[in-house]
Image 1 (spheres, helix red, strand yellow):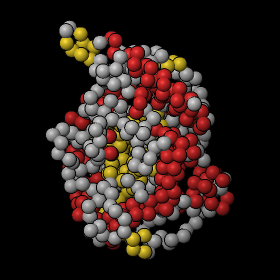
Image 2 (tube, rainbow, N blue to C red):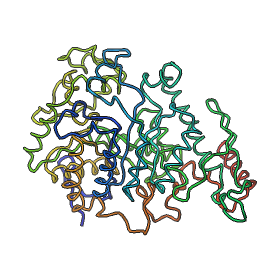
Image 3 (cartoon, one colour):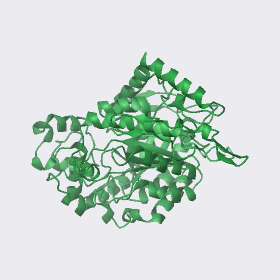
Length: 504
């Protein structure tokens, strides 16, 4: 029988769901903990070595994680004390410098068999045709263990270097471009080659009658095709991930995402975000409950006692870089926090944009009162450990209690776990937290024994569907797949019929 979980002081019970656990990383030092590269146990400075990533991947697979998610940015955080001032990011190492996220995947896949990999790529970084080949290559080499986190970028510093010196396009335009970008990706992966186009018989490698041009002509892209990569038998299309929380981002997620990464400071706010996207997905795109998995960002700090965990938190915070934290805050919000005095309550004097950002900010370190003024100094200090997400600190049992509370209140599907100190945080999660979650039946004891590795999509949605590695049939791209046995004419007739019904 499922044990009860505490919710707002009351005891309630809900059927337990098996949580999805991902490690949140990036090719940089510190990630969500600016300045902690100075901690004597931290090894995140070694992010640009193969051993850093292969060691982490082995550890995560030993802990039965579902996957490793690698974030990315394409320029320095230069809004703070700006514009175009990267001094704080450079001196603190706040997500600067970075390495390209897909380069390490093959090495990580070579030392694991089950772990999935989510990689972040922006729709402004390169042409969809070129990116699609990289994505297809990785999905082949990993046997279907790859997903793409679709981002439209938010840093002007990236746009200036990628768009010939131009500023970042307006938010709405970026998402319109992203819509067309992913449409091209779908067509290349699903509609250019039939499943059975590669024949390897009678002297024929690929049957040209089972390969077609996609002839995409849109506002931003003209891509005739055909795709240069053959279809793989593992997933056919890598998993689609999304992390935007704006109105346009939620709409994009509701239509396309199979996984949505979210970050809130309270489970009640998380519940609202999840509900909004689920409602959009159902009402606007016909995607029912369970079509999208939601993962919340957390940083766990675990001790043998509550007091030990609190002391560890405070020690970590002492290494934090306040300037780097302010560089991150200003980059995330687009608002230069240096315009406020250190002791000034930003929620009292800030712009509507920054006020709304801080409304849900209830993050606090051990020993702090429940309600403190959200000053520039306070916010920066909180960012130094856990960044833009909550820190769950205590014994493994206490952290597991809190995880259960978040699940009960928000109905979240799992967690994106990041580090304060790398690899210490992940080692403690594997050694102490995951066994406790396993005892409670919240995560699996081992990967399913199928006689083959799980694909990324199977990590998310299980293996009990007829074609468990392919998109759910309610996903908008599901019907774009050129199936084995279909002639080119039959497939194109079906595509045209689909377009006609959508237009009606």
